[in-house]
Image (cartoon, rainbow, N blue to C red):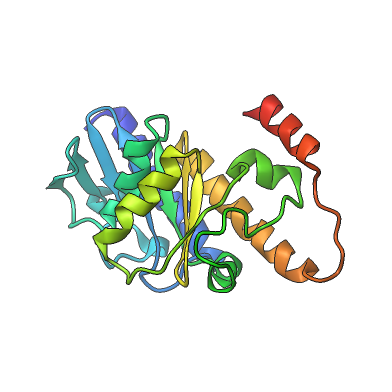
Length: 213
């Protein structure tokens, strides 16, 4: 096992523990993946993010076939959609975080910006759009093309209607930080709904994207 794979395994377990500790996943909900030079790592099916064993994290080859560790999450296709559509993506995080999931229950499928640009950090980490994908039952691979289409159109993250967020990032840290920022932005949106909060202007959003990418 390469030093990079060892590092990623340990980092996935540590991030999972912290996300679980903050209530961003419960029970065996949520999953994380990370890109390797010759394949992928993915949290195992029915695993708790708070108790991941780095040695048992699933190893997939470049064609997403299970080649080591415990059996991978049944939602491998959700990660594949982003990893294939966005070659620059190095990791994907899927959570059931409360406020982002609440927005996913309130938003209309097809909506492209269910959370307004209230803070620069949301724009910097998540981007301009956050498409809402129509409801599919958990584990239904039919959602993969819908997620991939959104990713190819430029989305770094999506909300699955009545399910939760799926977030990509250039690195594992980036994906986790973006997922955390998305949850905070959703919480702010719900707190400020109907209160006339100021949102960032299109010009301010554009400046952030030009400056920070």
